[in-house]
Amino acid sequence: MRIIKKIQTRRGAELNIKGKAEKVLSRTLSTDTFALKPDDFFGTIPKLIKKEGEVVQAGEPIFFSKKNPRIKFVSPVSGMIQTVQRGARRKIEKIIIAKSSAEDSVSYQVKSWQEMNREALKELLLESGNWPFIQQRPYGIIANPEETPKAIFVSTHKTCPLGVDFEFITSKNVAEFQEGIKVLNKLVDQNVFLGVDEDHPGVFEQIEEVQHYSVAGPHPAGNVSLHIQELAPLNMGDRVWTLNPEDVTNIGRFFQTGKFSPQRTVAVTGNSLNNPKYVVTTLGCELKPILDEFEIRYPQNRVINGDVLTGSTTSSENGHLGFFNNQITVIPEGNDYRMFGWLPFKDNNILSLSNTSFSRLFKKKGFEVDTNLNGEERALVVTGEMEKVFPLNIYPMQLIKACMVEDIEKMEALGIYEVVPEDFGLIDYANTSKIEAQEIIRQGIELMINEVG
Image (cartoon, rainbow, N blue to C red; front, side, top):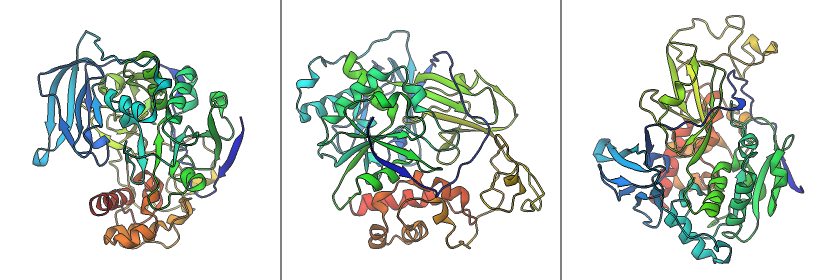
């Protein structure tokens, strides 16, 4: 393995939380219902192809993007459209599919895919429902099939709290992952950039026809925005595509079998669980049957689709796994009020990035956390606080301010094209003002899409 560049940063923080998933695969779980949520695909306005009560096969399109009808979203299982849940202004929030006992799948002819040109390969990915796996920078939206990217990035090193170990997930699917890389290389003019853990690249050392680079440092060192800035900086008009490692495997499996692969290996994590571990399931699966496999320690808990910094709260009774998620986190609700909680000796178990908590002096294996904010939103913003945990060459506080006042010219100058909301997850946690930086950046990106395109 030849490393083309070592990406290392000291800016950031390691949140040492209890509840990391043991590297053990629990039995493969299937559930009764599965869901597609259009909100998982940022910037996509759905147009339904199927209606409630209609029967679908696995891999059959259910809706497409109004902005680009070529981009189709397919059913992960065979069954029937049970419900189309709508919200305000009849916005489609969730399409629930009841799984049938039959395992009917749409099949495609893929034996001679190596002989296809780039446009024919794109058309096959679009028609089969594999295209939504590919995301685009700027903005973190689904890639535009009419364009050719400057580069494609696949980062296999997650640094977020209790993050999934993609080396463990991929170890049994190396051939499919390699096949997916070969497919992606035909969509771009240079080999895929593959980011690996500097200390433990594992099976990714074996992957050929890629440009390996290594990553080291505290979170958010694993965020692909930093890697793009270091290896293929975005200039005006440039596009870079990114993929989740398991989605590369799913694409590779499709080109081996001719059938859409909806596999999702999930790290079920959090200090509310006894013996957290990995579960093999399907995209959009129901969460309750999965959580029922675990012993939960507390009566009141919050289930998070994703990690504690960037995930979204979901219902433990009728929630479904997000399309891109490889992680579920369960932590206790923080309904208690801690008077004088800022005092150093008040609680040695408080996970803090400042020196006000005496817990930093104790070498603990992990901290028990809950959902307490330990404060409220305030107008005061501490200068320089955000920059300590933000490794990108961008001024985060100034960019947040520009987004709040909707100053498009300043947003462009300050780097809105180079970031996505998840890059500000640690800022949400670390800043004493308690402002929702991720939501501000998300609204700023929406403004850019609507006004600039």
